[in-house]
Image: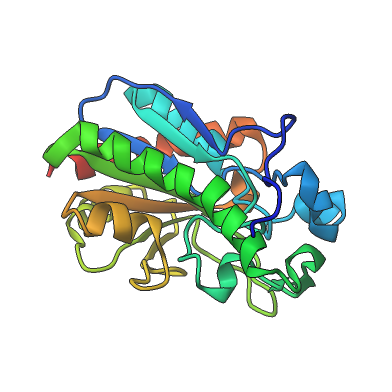
Length: 251
């Protein structure tokens, strides 16, 4: 027997969508928000913890909105925190509803029943990915998926991260090569080519399931969070990505 519905009347819908007219481009943000459904009482975390990178990709939504506006492209954002359920992990993966994130215990994820997990999958994870699938169905074989992420500037127990912008890829590197070649023309940038993160087939969900499986061209970008924590700088860094995205779309 399933527990009552997770999302109540005061909770937002699981997907934030902006329509667009671009004939190819779909922009997605897996970790756009730090929001937690009211029934989960902030997962037992303080507001300060939910403002940290463990809950969302700081600045990613502003970057994606700027790019979607520039290209007049459709934009889809997951509206809830990655700590509730990570849209970029397979639901059976323990990291999809983590007990600990970057050293911080998540009390609201302890001792979850199968039914409680099911509710998070059905009410948050599946609607987001259904929206992506439907949008790509409409765009067809010429569709192009742009996935926007941000990365911490100082990993826990690690050295400061030098990369300002990173491009992640897996089996199909064509769009990544075009984007990186363009970004390298700006000698002021420190770039990551599949560092600090690669697209991990079998672990990452969004790009592999929606683009790689369909054989669609795609680009997954990361920008360092200390550079984009405020809206103005986030918009500026988004525009620095435009030449690279243009190059990827042109191949």
